[in-house]
Each structure stands twice: as C-alpha cells, then as structure tokens.
Image 1 (tube, rainbow, N blue to C red):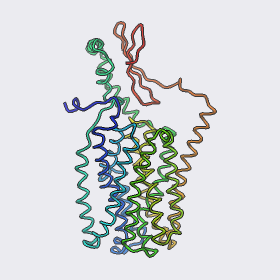
Image 2 (cartoon, rainbow, N blue to C red):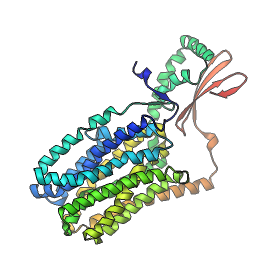
Image 3 (cartoon, helix red, strand yellow):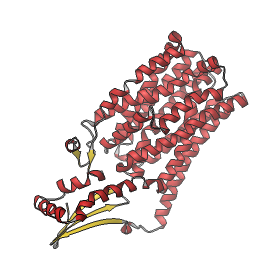
Image 4 (tube, rainbow, N blue to C red):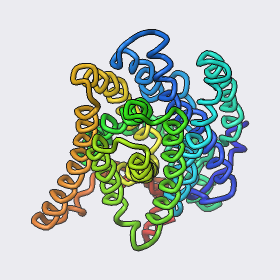
Length: 442
C-alpha cells in the first residue's frame, strides 16, 4: 500500500521537496565529511598522548575515511545515499544542487575547526570527541528528510507505468484480458526486474567509467593527506595552534565558494557541455597547489594555499556526481556513485600512513606533498588524454548509432501488438504501442 502512494514523476522535479533533500544532504556532509576533516586537529594530540610516529598516528584518520567509503557502516550509511538522492530529484540544476549540498563540508569545516580547538583546550581530546559524537546524532534528523521518489526511467516501476502512462483506456481492457489468458504477460514484470538487476552494474565494463575509476584512485590518493597534515605542517614551521586551526577554517569557507560557484557556473549553457573538462581542471589545480606547499613556510604564505586548495577542492567534489551521472546515466547513478566512493576507500586508507612514513623517513613534508601533487595531476591528465583519444576515434571511425543493441518483448492480441524496447546504450525504457496501420510512440 505504501508503494502505491509514492509520488511518481516523468522526470526529476528539479525543485519542490528536492530542496529539502538538498538541505538534508547539506547536513549529512557537515556531520560526516566536516567532522572527518577536523580529526586532523586531533593529530598532534593523539601523537603526543600515545607517543607514536607520524605513520602510525595517521592510521586513525585513514581508517575513519576508509570506513566511510568502503563499508556499509557508520558514516557510509548516510553519506552515499544522501548524495544519490540529490541526483534523483535534480537534472537541469543538478550541479547547483550538488554544489549547495556538498558545501556542508566546507561550512562545517569553517565552523568546527576553531570550535574543536577550543573544545580540546577546555575538555581535552576525549571530551571533544564525545561532544562531536553527540553532534553527529543529527544524522537521524537528516534521514527523516529523505523521501523516496519514483521516476519513469526506473525499471521497477515499468509495469505500472506501462499501464498508467502509455496505454489508453481501451487498450488497458485488452491488456487485462491478455494478462488473464497469457502466462507470458504475467511473467513479464519478473523478467524485467531480473534483466534490470543484471544490467544495473554493466557500467563497470564501460571504457569511460573504467578510466574515471582509475582517475578517482589517484585523485583520492593525492587529496587525503593534505587534510591530515596541513595542521601538523603549519605547526612545524612555527605557526601557532589557533592559526593552524584557522587555516582549516579558511580552507573550509573557500571550499563552500568552490562548491556553489562551480556548481552554478557549470549549469550555465556555455559550460554545461564542458563539465568534464571543468572537473579535470579543478583536480589539476589542486595538484599544482600541493607542489608549491613545501616552500610555503609561514602563516601569510599558507593562507593563499588554503584559499586555492579549498576552492578547487570544493569545485571537483561538486562535479564528481555530475561527471559520474554523465558517464553512466541518471538511472544508474546510485550504483555508480557507490562504486566511485568505494574506490576512494583504498587511497584514503593507504595515503596518510604512506605520507607519514615519508615524513618519518626524510624528516620533511616535501616528499609527501610532492607525491600528493603529482598524483592529482596524473589523475587530471589521464582523463584529459582519454577524452582526446575518444574524440580522435569519433573523427576517424564512422558512427554506429544504427547498430544499437535492443531487447524486445512483443505480445499480440488480434490487430494490436505491445512492444517494450530497452535501449542498452541509453539505459532508458521506452514503451511503444504498435497498431496494424500505424506505429506511434505513446
């Protein structure tokens, strides 16, 4: 009964309750990603209390980030579903919606970084973590805002949509008579569900998604250590504790600007077709910023770095779901995002301890930051070369659009035949009614 009352839309509504979904995702990113980033402020406290080196202490932050992206545990149960819900509710203004939703990470970092430093001074690191844990309980409120939505492209709604939207009243009566007499009609919904379940993860074999996945691995490896070691690095060059926490606040607030402005700009008609290159440009600029970090050894010089890195970090984070949706299509966005964020887990687990080991070995942060920078630049260059190779291939090879693979189910009843055509390349379901004298799209 509950499923029958669920609101159905021909496409994403681009508004309405969708803005409440954006607000919920905004709060989710504050409670998950912002809190995770602020763990770097605890780094020095953990290192001093437990008496461990950089590499071992870094495992604390690594495991938190890895568990968020890898398991079905903890933050992971909130973060990925909330992001996928935004993609369900928005299409035309998708980048802007994601920009607002993901800006919670920056706003949360801006507010929580100095607050966490004060909490540590007042209540020690144990009390600060306890208070943060109470704050994270607000995720329960965020979950209450996530209202499911059924879209035309969802295969599970296909049998009902076939009856409600694409078949006239007279044809409905014929279809009911057919369903009583023909076992093939009764089995069709089950066939559709099995077929769609199998096709749900076929994007894993797409060359475009495979290149994106490899690029994500290098990008995630490069960005993670910066949030762990920015505060310890600032302290090592003589910056005070409050100034070091303020650097994280700057990074957070500029992250918000990157989220929203890049989301708004890439929704414009002039840039909408170039969101792919906007994404790789943002990743490349973050990598370039990391290469200059070892020579920035004072607070006035670290402030511009926080501005630059924070802005482009917010920019590419906003575009990750958009680029993923462009690669696999909106119907498969939820599954594809799960894989994309799953791929973040391994670099998030490995890169901070590796960076810490380099610091312990060399006695300097230079090698760690250079490795991060080159990793992100390689991620951007890989996507750029892949897109150029694709364009060259399109130029030299004829289009094969006429050879699209189709799967058809046809039932006949006198002069009427019902055909359901699933176009695999577009991952969309079209419903056609075939008459003996005409072929019309319903």
